[in-house]
Length: 79
Length: 235
Image (cartoon, rainbow over all chains, first blue to last red; front, side, top):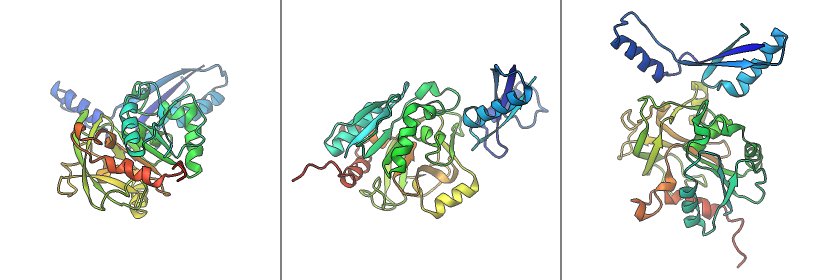
């Protein structure tokens, strides 16, 4: 079963990469783009077959390693 | 002073650190591979700079999961001293030995240059050989040195006097311009509540010999060597 973990910087944490990407989009002529935030996506192939248990396991992995919860929040999706 | 230097794959400042420690203490530090777990007998454990695990995931995130880290936590819990420089500081915050996080430099640029640091307190074994408010020069070389912590953590750090060094102008004033990486409140280095754990981004070990262009970093190591005398030979 697949789990998808999306990790984003928390609101209020400066994201210079997102800012630079936003500026590059503006240079390309996409004038109507507001704030851009950059994040990370992890696809995990899990042996677990129960979606609830898989989500719980992925959340533990996110808290322990995939996200630094001091600066990042995460979301787990079981697609 | 019996010191050990932890070596992870991708660490590259361990020999600089060894030179600084040996100059100050007269004793060669022990090199500790990250799979080792025996830190018995060490007064000081140093996590040096570099790019452990290629900075994969986040700087320091992979190294923070290494077998040696539990031993470092136990060493810290025993009241042992721990020094983390650059990637070492990043590893320490990832391992939650110190609070906060180190983000990408606000400029997005890798910074390889000297900076000026103000010594915020001298009643620690790391800073005892400096003067309070003294401004020292230190090289820095990092892409992710932008210290961040939430306001409650920052207020606690400031309230308990746990900010060890701040980025300043050569005259000691705190300005945004002196704060090249964008760290909150110009913080360059912080201490644990018992003041035996220090993490900082700049490299005092790279300024300990006139041949290196200066000796501003030497007092940090001399202070440690003078305080941690457990192995001083009997007279």
